[in-house]
Structures are given as C-alpha cells and as structure tokens.
Length: 390
Ligand SMILES: *Cc1c(COP(=O)(O)O)cnc(C)c1O
Image 1 (tube, rainbow, N blue to C red):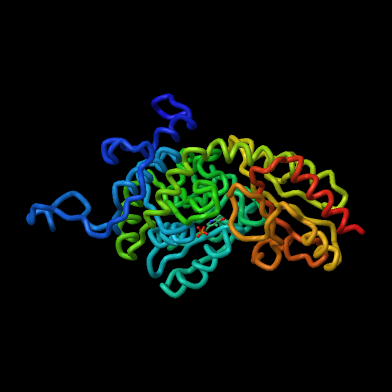
Image 2: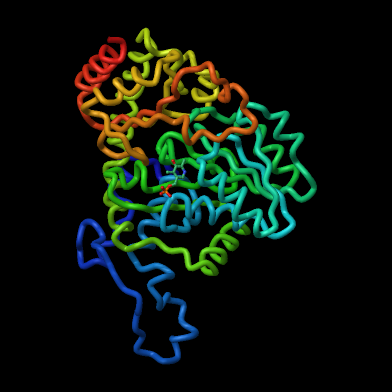
C-alpha cells in the first residue's frame, strides 16, 4: 500500500491521468509534438516549461509520475526501450576509468553493452555468479562505481539476496541498479530495499500486448536523478509518444494481467515438474527452486515467465516437440497476452556459472504464459510431449 493507504489496483487506475491537461479525456490521448510554441519571446530561453518534444510532453510526464507511483520513486526517466533504459542507468553511474560489476545472468544485450560499449568508453566490467556473494565482494575495487543486478536472472532465473548487497554497496559508495522487468514493479520494489535505481523494459508487462517499446529508470536518489537527467539529455534519449500512450494504457490492467498470467505460470510450472520429459523447472515460486526462500522474502507474487530444462533429448525429437505446439508462439520478448516459448541455449552466455555449460544436460526452454485457458495450454504441451516421445 502507498502512503495514502490506497491499494495498487486503485492507484494504477487513477495514475497517469490529468483531466485538466487533456480536456477531460479519461486516458491521456496520444500527443505528438516536436515544437511547442511560446507567445513570450523572453520565455524561449528562460522559461521553466519544456519547449521541445524530445524533453517530454505532458503525456510523458503523467506516465513518468505513474511509474514513480508504481515503484515508490521520486523520479522516473523514460527511454525508447528496455535496453535503452539499462544502458542509460549504467552510463549515468560510471565514467571513464571506473569499474562496474554485473550479475552473470543479466539480460544478454545489457551484458554486451558493458562488454563492448562501456569498454570502448574506458569503463571496466566484471561479472559474478548471481548466487555467489563472496565472489561479488572479491570483485570490488577502489574504482567500482556500480553493481547491476537483475531478478530473476534472464533465461536461468537466479535471484539475488538483495539486502547484503545493498549494505556492501553503501559502505563502498557504489550505485546499485536492478532490472525489475520480471515483476514489473508489482511484486518487487527495489527502491524500498535501498537500491539506487530500478529499471524496467515497459515493452514486456506494462505495454503487455507485444506491440510497442518503452523503458524507464526509477530512483529516489537526488544525485542519481541528476545524472540520469543529464545523461538522457546528452544522448537525446526519449520515448515515442505512441509508445507512451500504449504504456499508460497498459498500466490500467497491469496488475490484473500479471497476477493472472503469474498464477497460470505457477500452475504450468507444477505440471511440468511432474512430466517425465522434464528434468528441472526454473521458477522461483516453486519450493524446489534453489532461491525459493529469497523469493518468499522479497516478492509478493510471480509473473508468467519461467524456464525448464528437458531431460537429454535427440535433436529430431526436440524439433518434433516444437513443431507440434499450436498455442505457443516462437518469438522473442515476453509479458504479452499470448503464450510464447523459446529454446535458450543458443543465446546463453555465462562466464561464472559453470553448471550451465555442461554438454550433458537437455535443452533449456523459456515460457511466457499468456492469457489463454490453462487447460488448453496443458493439453497443447501434453500432445507435443507425446509427439516428442513417439
Ligand atoms: C527485454 C528485456 C530488456 C530489453 O527490453 P527492450 O524493450 O526489448 O529493449 C531488458 N531487460 C530485460 C530483463 C528484458 O527481458
């Protein structure tokens, strides 16, 4: 609950609205403008109002306010997509000569941004096994300025015990950034636990319909706020008005969708755990998950994204499995209303987590559960597993 006592569902219905500014329209309409005129020439350079669309229009402001509300932040910086938001948060935290530490299971393109772009800008990056606090400690140097976490980790679903990491970072004056896309800010509030910034790909659950891009960085830290604002201004980072509209519309039903998809996900995860073709299910809400205890301490629920590892399977049988699926689409992204599935191994990059490198294990598969009937999804999986075994 927020300070004024209203529950999240209520706040998401009433956030991102400004009847005065939009002629009474319930939802802020799409607002497109590059040039914003002033009738007072003296205000062209000295007014307080933004006069250029790249800096954000009124509809950007109400979406920023709503994201701040969702994550308990005092400031939100919008970005063109989730990766843009991750890069912005990192670039705001470091400069040439600095060093950062990121989890081994961060989203692949975030890792690539550290390894390639930040390196070219003179920033060093180290990676640590998401479950190994001692390794994280050992990597801290005098010039370490940022720790980048993600929960659960992309593709492999490890969780961080955040409290000791925040404590450590505080002692060493290090910014902590958390990619919170999985919980969409509904089930986990990084800022409440003392992290410097929370990042979201709005592309996933907030927009929620697989038809737009957006990113956001939320913070309560005044120093970090200024750095975010300056970095975004210097790079010309902004979010398209059409995507702003989709994000604030998606926010209305966010809690309803993510709870429903999360419930179906847990149901499907339990079902998969019982299936003879499945070796392990990677879902933090399951008691069998190595970080289940962390999940119960930090999270109030689960979204609909999880993974599973098959028992070793010959390639043709695996192909039969995928070819037989009718309800699960094969495609990137997640958090939309429709179910998706991808084999993860071709994009799995791990330097600090040897368990994932074993050649003996079966395929790692990621599922994003949509809003279809859970009975239909199970029936689809059942027939595909049968075809795989035949
Ligand atoms: C998809 C994703 C992103 C990037 O979002 P885009 O909008 O596709 O750029 C960042 N972090 C995580 C965890 C993601 O899954």
